[in-house]
Image (cartoon, rainbow, N blue to C red):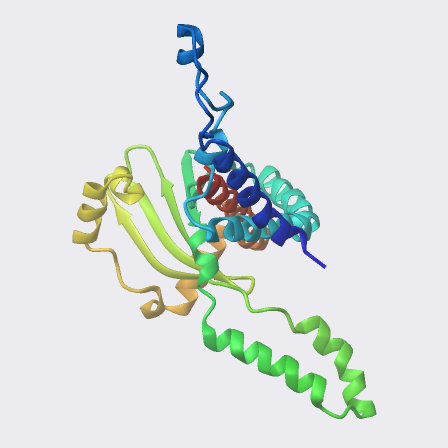
Length: 287
């Protein structure tokens, strides 16, 4: 049975071939006398030949378009329910944390801002981090899942299975978050951290007298920031001091709810950007 996809590839070529055939002038015997009106009239039908100009550059274009269309439909159908749940959870976390969002379609970076007393807090993260799941972690998770399915289950194993199923979650990606805390006439702190598996790990804490350098909106500011002393790596600091820094951030809204929201937001936005990318590419190929 001919599939719809095969039919969609064959139909345009058939119709266009008919159009090209009909454009060929037909050799007819010339009448003995023709008026000037008859001579100026073309021997072929004056209908539109737009079908010829809409013909794709290559036959594979139609197959690619069909595959892109299938991918768009699959992504919209399969991710609709998850997207609604994520959007509701994200909205609640942002409102409860009093965060303002700057999220531009087509851009990877998301910027959250809020005020805390006389401080202006800015947290940035990017959807590119969703691709940072290490191959070793993913392979290890897959191996564990397969081994659990193949093992013979004793009564004691069955009693543990319910706990294992709850604890075994897909590997999460490390989401890098840069947090700047600015005070009037006192510069700004730049805290670089990574969120993974429900834990915020501080990597570096820096202070800059110029808040613009901490935020580094331009390449020049970023170059200047890299040339300044940024402080020691957080792993070299006293663990008790790091614990106090954790409480410092938590009081400013970077708590567990914020951490979960960031990873959900990255997944939610990446999915939207991917579907939009599919739509843009499909329109380009079809043009």
